[in-house]
Structures are given as C-alpha cells and as structure tokens.
Length: 387
Image (cartoon, rainbow, N blue to C red; front, top):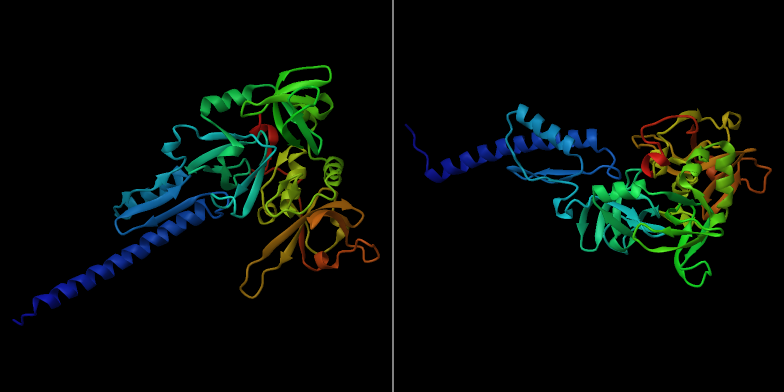
C-alpha cells in the first residue's frame, strides 16, 4: 500500500473541504438573493441587508417575516446557520419606534450626515417609523415607505402609547403655501415657519387666531383663515382634476430641488407627490415608482387619450439589453400642456406652435398613467396615516 506524506493528505483534505464550503456558500447566497428579490426588490422602501459569513447570517432587516421565511428555507435544505441578523426597529430604541416631524419641512438624507444627498422631505405632523439610531441621526420610514435618515432635531420621538395619544388629538391643517406661527396674537415673535400640509394640534379656538401646539410641545398662534379642521379638510380632499390643477398652479415658480417634496422646493416626482398629498392622497416617492401605479392611458403620443390629472413619464425606453429608465414626471393639465418641476415648477406644451413647446420632453416621452379613480396598495389616503 502506497503511503503519502501527511502534509499532502492535509492539503488534499483542506481543498475538498474548501470546495464543499464554496458550493454551500454559493447555494446560501443564491437563496438569500432570492428572498431579497422577493421581499425587498426596492431598497428605497425595504431593508433586507443579509449576508452569510461562513457559519452565520449577519446584517439587518426591517422585515422579520422575510427573515423567518429565509431561515425556514435553509432548514428545509438541512442547512444550519447561526442567526445574527439585527431585526429593526432596533431594541436600543427602548420602544420609541415612532416619531412625528416637528419642523415645517424636515430634510431626510441618504446617509446620517448633513452633507449627504437629500433623499426626500417630510412635512410637520407626518408620522414616521423609527428603525435605528446612529449618533444624532435616526433611520426612519415615511408613510410612503421611503427609508432615509433624519436629524434628531427635526422629530419628536414617541413610543406606541405616545403616538396613539398624538393621533387622537384635534388637529388643524395649514393650507396656504407659506406662513408663520407666532408666540402671541400680536405676531411679535415667530415660533416656526409653516408650509402647506403642516398638521397642528388645536389647543384653544379664538376669534381671529387659534392657539396650536406642535408635536414637540411648542405652542403658538396662527390666523384662523390659514387653518382648516383636519376632519373637514379630509372630507374635501379628494384628487379631482380641478383640485389637482389648482394646487399645481399655486406652486408655479417653486424652485427645483433634488429630493424636495414640499413648497420650499421640489424635484419632478416630489412635485407630483406633493400636489396629490395636498389633495388627500399619498403616492410613491419617485417617478420610477409612480409609473407602476394607475392604468396605462397612452404610450403613442396620442394626446387625445389624456385627461387632466394624468401623470406623464419620461426617460429612455428599454433596448439592446438595457432596462427602461424613468427619469422625469409631470401632470397633464389639458390643451396639450403639462405642469412639471424642471428648473422650477412651470407649464410646458406639446404644441409646436406654442411658445411653451418642449421638444426635449416630447422626444423622451414614455407613457401616461391615470391615478385618479384607481386603487392601489401603494396609494394611501392621508387620513389612513394622519388621524
């Protein structure tokens, strides 16, 4: 019987083990990617950052059910791993899994620092789900499910009971584009600026001013003419063609702001999202998400098919192995015209004889979708979120 040196036997055994481990790792990573694709295909609205580290699962997710399904799938394949995945909300939050925006407009960023890209915005009174904390920043999820970071100074943290209490108070909706809350009816000192869509707690009714409270406890006075009882506003806030056009035109000239979703500045999809919000509906944040809502109206530039309030999408069509890219959105206002945020909120036309003719947008037009009158699990009524 031929005998081999012990070091050759050890090397051979290690190579076999490594080969098997590699195959197992490829299988596990493929399974993880399958579950990520199924439960978190869009990282903007779902977090499933799970890795396999040789003998354990690590990372984090805000979808405990998806993680449970993943582990169950591995067990059925006789694969045993140690679960070290952090499930959010993080336990270090001590139950403060909720927050309410306390600024007229809070800037939410792609990373926990002020120099990071502006991802989106949230207006005063917007409830947020809090996922975790890093120094003075919180990872939060907005009602449209967008995940981003907010400075601690822009929110009031709450536990479940505190959030329920805030939801139960009498509320007012601030309706003008801009305004100010003062420390007294004499309008001596500002307490906070206000923008359309801000939600305030009613403290005391007055003849000319209502006393209101912000989610962080600050109180002040706002002219009655600027406020509408939240319940009354909800009853009248239904996206109608006239209402959407009126709101959109009120924002004419508002500057373009990447990541903006408020009267202080809007990007293209932030503009369409804002005008729908101010008419009672919460739609997805980005153009590439909004395009999946509603029903197809046109993709052949037959402008006769369009109705006021329809959303027009622009970009690059799919081709030569490249996916479609949706990069812009606007809203149809009739007469071969649409309103959109491009440099500023403005009206453009598809009529070549018009001084507002926009050849550039016409060339990259993709299709039109109709949201008005169409239900979707991704479109919420404002009163489903703010009560």
